[in-house]
Image (cartoon, rainbow over all chains, first blue to last red; front, top):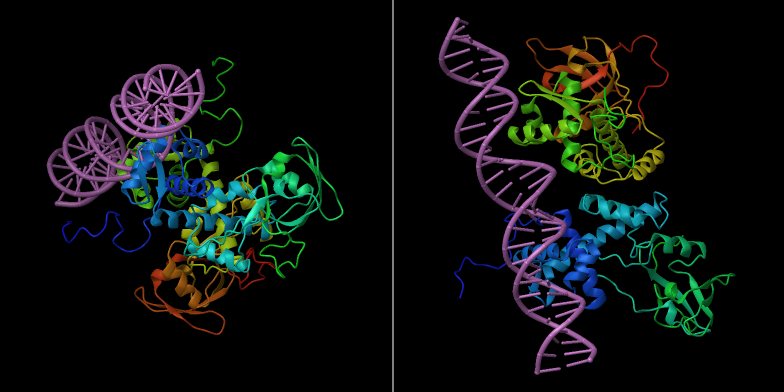
Length: 252
Length: 252
DNA sequence: TCAAAAAGTTAGCCCCGCCTAAATTCTCGA
DNA sequence: TCGAGAATTTAGGCGGGGCTAACTTTTTGA
């Protein structure tokens, strides 16, 4: 048993305020969070890859973060965020997505250029600033790429989805989301008007993983299966009675 | 004479882009610039003081910046920015002041809380973002505290001024500027409506460095000489024909 | 004028975040 | 099942930026 003053393994700052993470630490937590939610676990090499850093560097940082209670690390096995680590990650993600929303919504940034900017600002902006931006936007629930914005206390409303590549021929679905990390993809999607909230129909599908013909409004763009796999659409067919209000916050 | 490839003693990044200064470096250059323009020179201890850092740390950093051509350092004698260093400093100052203007002008920040926020954002915002903010504000020429905003190529329009404490009894002058670094002073000035662009009259002056009575609009606040020394006003009496348009960009 | 105080610098150290090279451990296919 | 290859960790370094303690130079005032 522990001595009575050994409250918890995690060091909390005595003043109760959040410990003020460094920029690299925030980046690690965010990357690990995203890998976890995509693959269920975060491998050292994946983290290294995501952050463009040597694997050995990840091991070092991960050990430090583990001693600080942000994650659990089983050597050679992988890494898992603790509740504390997850909250810190979601805080950063909230900032990132609100910043992206503000940059497109208020300052006229094209959606393919907000990622890098938000990536830097998310470490510098105060909570106050972030909440002012959110308020100026009417408290959006999703960023310009359709990613849900976590609440201040770390709740994320993930929507059920499938990829556009999986949409059966003849079916229509509402576009939900696409990654913010690929500018040229985003520029192309903007060109064919495929953006969150837009309805898209699978017109035809060439065999052997060939190109897909879509209908978006009056146009019928043809796209590769690769691209279609990156675009998320609603899980439920929207041919039936569809929800009166789509959960999209930023109609262009 | 130099070999033909020995272009200049300063290392320039081969791609022509500015070398991407670190946050501490930007802070040093900015602090040195401000000390230089206030006192004509920057002493090690003043820099240490301004950045809340040990004097020994300043010596170290200064040596590094000197080898990189941002400043000249004569040991025991002081430090002076080169043209390159001055430009870098002004770039940061421009960002800072545009950010302050944007935060008050668009996001509703009170003027006593913009300094800290801008202090962090100035290192993270891209040029593009800064120029978008400037454009959204109609390209202001002064920040909310009346400090002139340097142009992109580092030209700063300093106005001739004296302190409010020097204003002779009976004279009226337009308030020009106050430091952005003292929140409680700024809150008090806001209370008595003493802000850049406002006309203030010296009603009376108690002897022996006593309190000063001002007239601002319909009110006659009494302030200490200490406070008055922090407030800058126009150099020329504004009782004669005054400039049709005061050079102030952000009328509240 | 000259010694004490103030200012500045050097020496030596620390932590953070990163690296490469050399182990180590895990995994998977023959 | 076992060994090659992949993944991971350890060992040893490095640069940036900071610190304290000790030393030097400059300034100052008695």
